[in-house]
Amino acid sequence: MERTLVLLKPDCVQRRLMGAVIRRFEEKGLNILAMKMMHVTPDLAREHYAEHVDKPFYPGLEAFITGAPVVAMVVEGLEVIGVIREMVGATSGLKAAAGTIRGDLSSSRQMNLVHASDGAEAAQREIGLYFRPEEICSYEPTLIPWLKAGDEA
Image 1 (cartoon, rainbow, N blue to C red):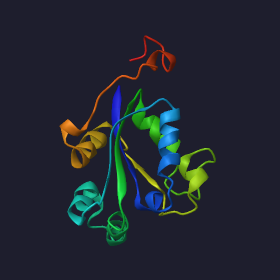
Image 2: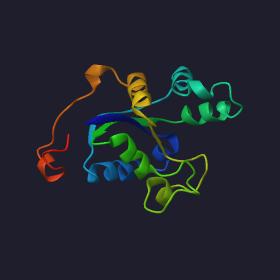
Image 3: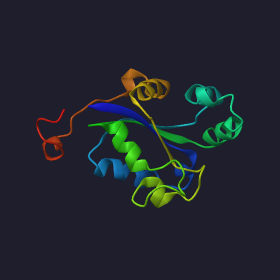
């Protein structure tokens, strides 16, 4: 099983799409192990987006991510990083395929509703930025046998 960080960004919160997005992850059979609404501080934004801090677009990115609350989640499942990135769709809502979260709910290049870790190393680092270990509640839903074969780990 793999874990990833998902952020429902300020535009998702402000547009009241949190439940619609979370529902998609739950319907897919993914486990939400931790979730909280919070304000991203400028310091946290700089840590999260460290590779972008010196780029010309960074001030706008920081203003956006700190402008309203986000919902941070730790999500677990088989190949969950790739699964969620496919579900979320292309970065630009204008180019994201229909059926993806961004393709169905976003019509902007920048207001793209969701952040999802892009790899295992990033997921581990990002989860550590948003959650303390004791905030993550591991569990196995009783319906697991109906979501995956017994030999899938």
